[in-house]
Image 1 (cartoon, rainbow, N blue to C red):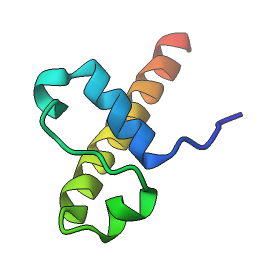
Image 2 (cartoon, rainbow, N blue to C red):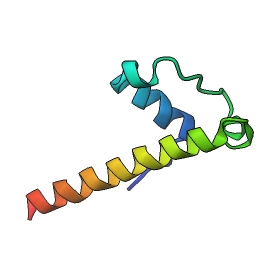
Image 3 (cartoon, rainbow, N blue to C red):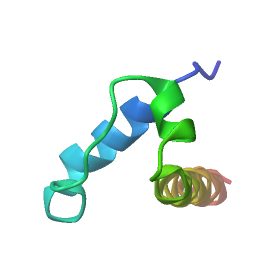
Image 4 (tube, rainbow, N blue to C red):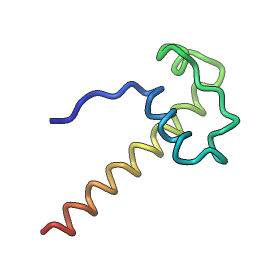
Length: 66
């Protein structure tokens, strides 16, 4: 089963994997701040990219396992 991961945790995980790309990005403590902040478009764009990449990797894994 898939477990729900908070958006900010996704961003923190991405920062851990790519410190050069995400190292200087402030990640708010509250989920609401991701959506309601002045930078919400930026955060949502980054999250969309992360989720698309994750979905693509799952797709590739399924194709390899066929």
